[in-house]
Length: 300
Image 1: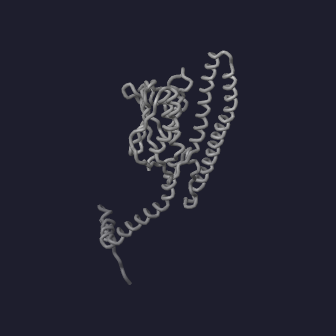
Image 2: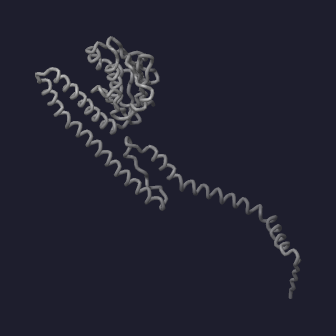
Image 3: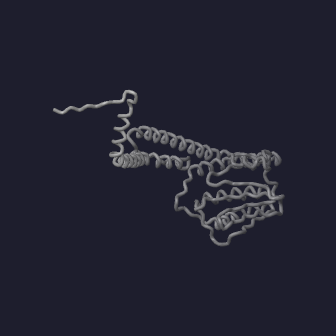
């Protein structure tokens, strides 16, 4: 027979519990605390591995754009609870891509269909006996043809994709543009010069898109520079191309507007429509009495 007698101070009822906790912690705390730390580390590793696919998906989503509309989120490593959301996002991206394709195809088809009637109208305008009316009509038709060509360029540039290994010699491209545009400049009593780098300058991009971008800048320079002046194409060793001329330039409050498609600086001119290509940004600013345009191609 064993008798256990316990007494408790009625005035301080928590003393016994405090003693038990103090005794317990002094003997067991050195084991519990490391175990808790290990459990916390294990939880961090588990949550990190579980959330890693979501982090990778968010990085991929930042790359999705009209030029890279074919990118999709992977469902293989996603948590089961998140997989339906990822699947719905991919289906939405499929619908958006189809919409972009339909829009580009419609734009290109409409522009191509307009070329033939414009060519017929120009031929009929050239045959008019009233030479003054003929010149006015031809000027309007040429302006419409320019807009049609810009629509085709936009449709092509919107579908343009630049691979990781695509390289182009921007110095050679600028020389080709100068040779291509020289007859137009000479016919208007103007000239074209290429300055800057003499060695090849390799940049990340496609030759056709860069040729079109530089050509647009040079064409605008020829259109607006004064007779007996020179349009200069300066090629930097860092891949920056600056096209300068002796034209009036663009007012400071209108320079951001040139990035809007079909913005026109002088609406009285039939050839004054400007469209910005997504493959490069054309920056225009006055240099004294001259105007200059700078283009930074894709750099590797």
